[in-house]
Structure formats: structure tokens, C-alpha cells
Image 1 (cartoon, rainbow, N blue to C red):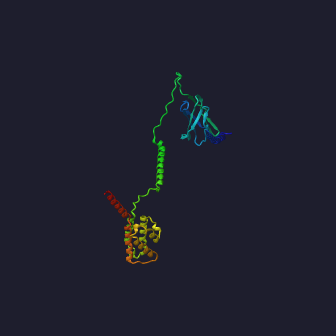
Image 2: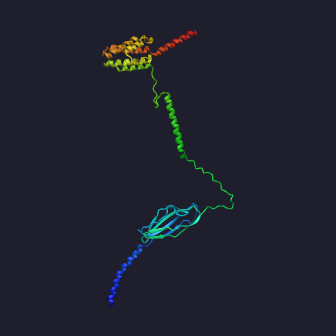
Image 3: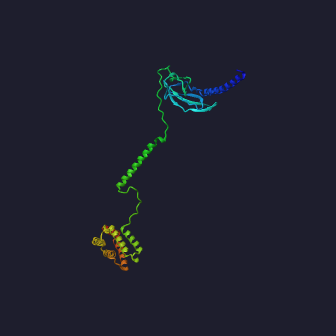
Length: 334
């Protein structure tokens, strides 16, 4: 084989060898294992105190891995309280730097050799270094075994009004309920409505109300406008209401004949009885027989109504009786 053939074979071998070595280098790079570093805030704690274990993982971007951790116990005597969320940072050479903290504590005094933390990536398993944790009890003064510390006094919290709002509101609601119940009982005893009503105007005496109604009727001028039936209906209604209050007779529910029968024996109405009879009988003729009285008869009926009320006023009778009593007293004194 000459020199030319040897050089040709050498070049072909180089052409095939370069890609092969490059592929092998890529596989080596792709298969690089993650790195794990571990540190602890404090390697010596008291019983019940807490400390953090810091895990730092360096791996290629896109490389999947996980850290198997127990749920509550890292080892016998050491409890795992919490696994804090990881913090991921991109660093040089397209790598991830992942930091994760684990919070641990212990309630038994001893020197613990913590188990290594594990990172599993595909078929690879990487272990961290082991750390030592010393857990000590509280210092005790053994020089004087008879010395004891008394129980501390109860600490009183500051006064806050908000803590007493339920009690205050409850008392106010209870008082409000008592007031409502007392008001209802009072209204029931007085036989009044539960809701407060407006103060009614004092009721006028029967004769004043009747005279006031007759004045209003007079101003309406009903019979002058041909409204005879309406005129006599109003006149008789005014007189009947007056008779009911003055003589305690249910005149609104009686016929004219029944009203006259009840009043004919009353001494106070003797002088004005004929006038009342004329008004009631004429009103019946107008209302039921459709009679059309003369204007003079209408005027006489209205005047007779005035005279009947004025002549039978209870106040007048009381005044006469009181004056008679006064005269009798004066006579006796003499």
C-alpha cells in the first residue's frame, strides 16, 4: 500500500471518528448527574426549638427530578414540620439552581446524625452529606435542689370594648323587649290600639254640633236649587243625631213615628214637640211621596229645626237647675 492510499484511509477514518466522538461527548453531557449541597441554620438547639435545613440543587435545564421526603418524621426523635416552596434560578451554562428549605424540630435531647437527603433523576440517585443536630434540655440549677420557681401570675389582657359588644347589645335588646311588652300590656288594659293615634279634637256638645250642622246646611241652599229631598234628608239626619245624644234615643234606627212616640212624654220637649212633628212628617212626604213643598214650608222647617235644638239644649236645663239650687240655698240661709 503506497503513501497516497494510507493518507486517504487516514482522512476517511478521521471523518468518521469526529462525529462519533461528538455524539459520545453529547451523551456524556446529557447524562450529567444533579449536584446537591446541604446546610443548616443551627446545629445546636433546645428542646422544642426549630431550625431550617437548606437544600441547594444544581442541574441542567429541563432535567426532571424529585426529592423524596417523609411526611412528618425525618428520623426517630426529629420531626419534619414543613417543606417550604422551592426557589429556582437560571445560572450560567444553561443550568438551574434550585433552593429549598425544610423546617425541623425535636422534643428529645440527644445528638442526632441526620440521614442524607436524596435527589432522584431518572435512573440516577444522588445523596447529600450527613449533618449532625444536637438537641439540649433547658439548663437546670443543681446547686440548690430546694429552690423552686413559683407559677407565674395570670396575665390580664387589656380592656377592649369590642369584647363586650355582645353583652351590651343583648342587654339593650332585653330592655327594648321589656318596654314593648309593657306598652302592649298598657294598651290592652286601656283597650286602645297598639299604634299611637293622633290626638282627637274634643267633641262638641250635642246642641253646638247640631247648630253648626244646620248653619252648613243653610249655606248650601239645597231647596233653593230644587233639591228638596236632599234638604229634608239632611235636616232629619241632623235632628236625629242630636236626639240620640241629648235624649239617649236610637233615633237613627227608628221611623219618624217611633221617634215621636219616644219623645212625646218628655217634659223638656213639650214646647217644641209640635215643631219637630211637623218637620219629620213633612220630610217623610218629600222623601217617600215625592211631595214638592212651598218655599215658605222649607223655610219654616229650617227655622223649626233651629228652635227645637235651642229650646231643648241640655246646658240651658243645667243652668236653670243650678240657678234654682242657688236660690234655694239663699232662701235657706235667710
